[in-house]
Length: 157
Image 1 (tube, one colour):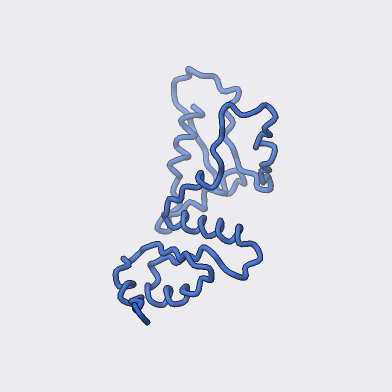
Image 2 (image 1 turned 120 degrees about the vertical axis):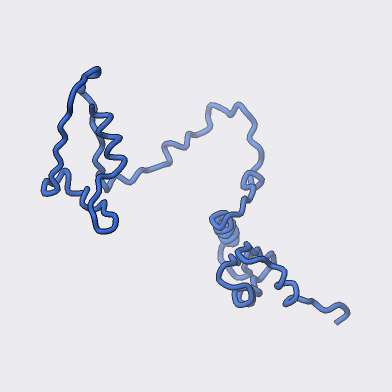
């Protein structure tokens, strides 16, 4: 070798908690990086030679880098948008489907007259189905009324 690679010495300069991106055609160093850098470092390979879809692979790993705290400039992956866009540009809203399989209770304030003053009596019975979910708000083994519940009570009065 004309000039040796001092890989181990270089790894000593990588700080704890670093995000390490391997830019190589094979991701050969991932196992070595995981062993050498420890559990607090995030190791991400950007290209994998025999992966069936390298575009998905690199975008997935850029997403992992983002989730780890990196700030990739995703806008550089696309050509700049010229405004105003054409009227024939499809809207994104029709491509999004919401999951309505769970039903959540929503405060209903219709028919509540404003400007009332006086006292309000609020009855909460954990044996009733409508209030039973409050039993799940426990801190140190005690069931406590959630702070957001107080906000709802203020809205209702």
